[in-house]
Image (cartoon, rainbow, N blue to C red; front, side, top):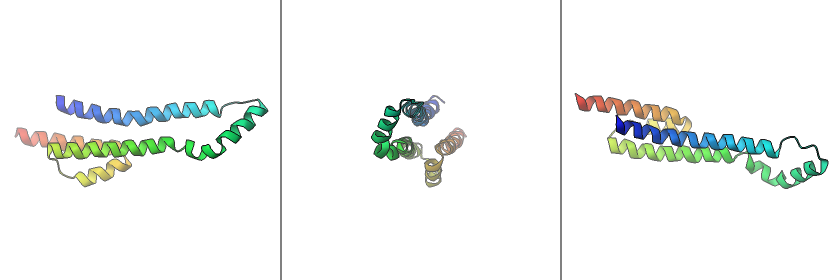
Length: 118
């Protein structure tokens, strides 16, 4: 059970990092594009961020995709380490919904532990 707790904590941290970054990023964007009353600052902001704007809002999405791929890498390692089956289905589920892949890994892990005890 101790080993399972370590594995799930690893995945919980990997799920929380992009969400916390997304929260911090949204707060930053709100501060930059917040309530600016000065006409000069409004024009300055529009000129500076005009080109950068299209990339700036997609950074949390890119970070989320990177962390999904990191989770997939760890799942491949853990599936091979514990000799579990149904790897491909779990990886596809993990790419779209990471929590679903982790849930399927934990269910397969528990069934494997039950089989080993019997």
